Length: 188
Image (cartoon, rainbow, N blue to C red):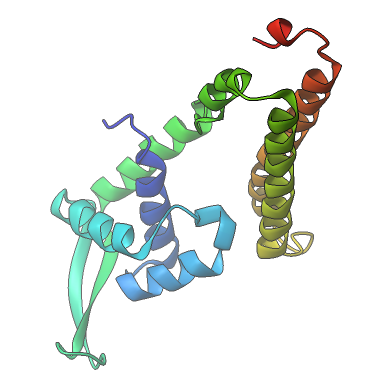
């Protein structure tokens, strides 16, 4: 069983195909794009790669359907096998129970802020704050009004926004800590 960061992508692809019963890579890509921020790290190339790999591993059954536009004049349709359903449930349990920290590089960068003058440190932290605020606005807009969605969709959207809100709070505390530090050596 894979325990890496890609398991959530497998879960997304298995779950989305399982929900629909049968779908093409193109249809899957359209659904992913329509969900914006919830599936932001699942790109078109990842989708086709995962579909192929998961089919090779026996998690999908593939069949062709004629009448599609394009060179081949047909499209591949994927449907979940019993093995794929078991893998989906295994990954679902793993992802719900697992907690992993997110490393973005900011932890390392903050340590080296000591090499900059105090005003430059503050300016950079304020720029990060603005960047995170802008990101939050984009995420909130992309998620739209979740009040009419089901409770689990609301929870997923809330989790995405809660992570961004936590980052905003951390930046706010960091700016306050740098502003309050009187002794430059105390900032190390």
